[in-house]
Amino acid sequence: MRARLDAVLERAPVGTGVRSLLPRGLYTSADPLTALEQTERAVELLHPEYFPSPWAVLEEVDRSPALELLILQSIAGRQGRWAVREAEVKDAKIGRDLLRGLGPIDPLGARAKLEGAKAAYFAGSYLEASRLLADADRCERTIDGSIQLAVALWRAGSIDAAVWAIRVALLEDLDRYDLRTLLHAHRIESSLRLLHEQHGEFGAGELGRMALLAEDLARPVPRARGPSSAGPLARSPSSAAPLVRRRSSITPRRGL
Image (cartoon, rainbow, N blue to C red; front, top):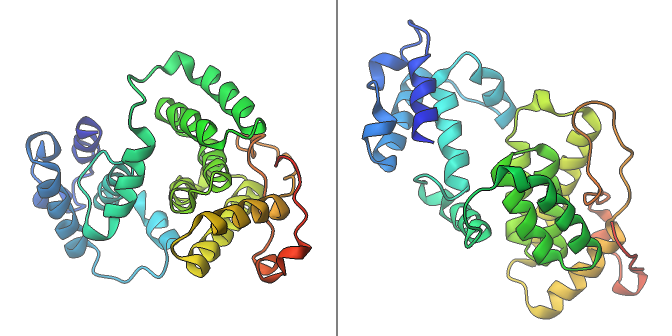
């Protein structure tokens, strides 16, 4: 992580103002919190304008090494691998919990982990599927993998972690999405966000009810053409409207 950040700083074009604000080798030599604070100050000075949405920030990233450095640190913090601001502590804890006990990274075993996750998911072992998907994600971050992880965590009743996973997917480069996958990810995020806002802290009974609700909201996503299409674990929850139906109207279905 430190080497990647310093590489971004090193290739920053002259005239962007970044090199005058951030010293060479900052991310290798400084502690993460100090480096994060200095990056935030640089962004404030170089970008006093208001960004109306995350997409506006992402559109500016190619022209702003300072923004790229801040986003990389934010993502690493949410994965539990970098310092975080107070508002991101909860996300960092979720990332650490998902990665705890996974052992050394094994890039050659990524495909086997994905196959194991698929088998565990369809056997109803959603936490095991989540663990395997998180392990595969360490080998190669993919949009589909983050979407599948979000759905598996949702089915396991870990709503906070599912929200974290789908937002990790939506932080990826938009150019890597095809339209159907992007819409699919947004539908999952909006449904999970509404569940989170409506239910707050969940008891065992509520978690069981939401597991049935996840089944009822699920429907297959047509496979899209292009490099990114929703994998076999991820299916699209419908709009949030069915959340207000009576429980008696819910008809669980097997699998997503």
